[in-house]
Image (cartoon, rainbow, N blue to C red; front, side, top):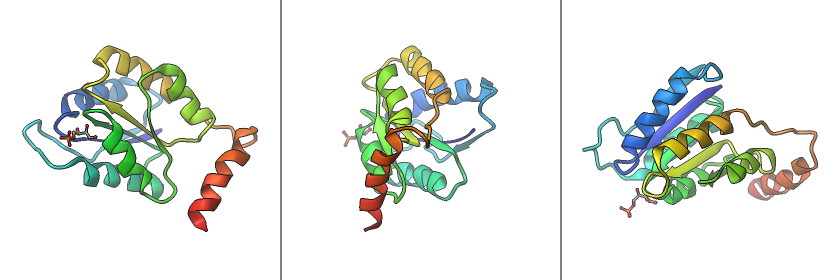
Length: 150
Ligand SMILES: O=C[C@H](O)[C@H](O)COP(=O)(O)O
């Protein structure tokens, strides 16, 4: 699985910790870091999150993992990219259902909300969840796509 990552300066430290986790996970075949690359870089979060989400939309990454202070700004930004379904989730059940119910390709985390160890646990589990296009959830997700395309 190819993972695009991005964080603003509020999320830089957690992004770095999560990249270490991703780099050690055999399920992850590639990590594409859209920045920031330095905690002193105060670039605003929207272009960073949008760039990562666009990589997913173009098929260059399978999922994106975004980090800012709350996860909310990154989530809103990613959801503006056509075809992208992004969520904030700070608990394992929501992260799981975001994939299985909603076919979300993007998980946003808030570094000011969640601790690094719990974040790592959630991300590790998140990598193991997959959407079933034959499930009853697929028709519900199709409504979202149809609205987006209308
Ligand atoms: O959602 C936005 C993020 O939490 C960001 O890291 C901080 O944004 P702010 O500086 O506008 O509070």
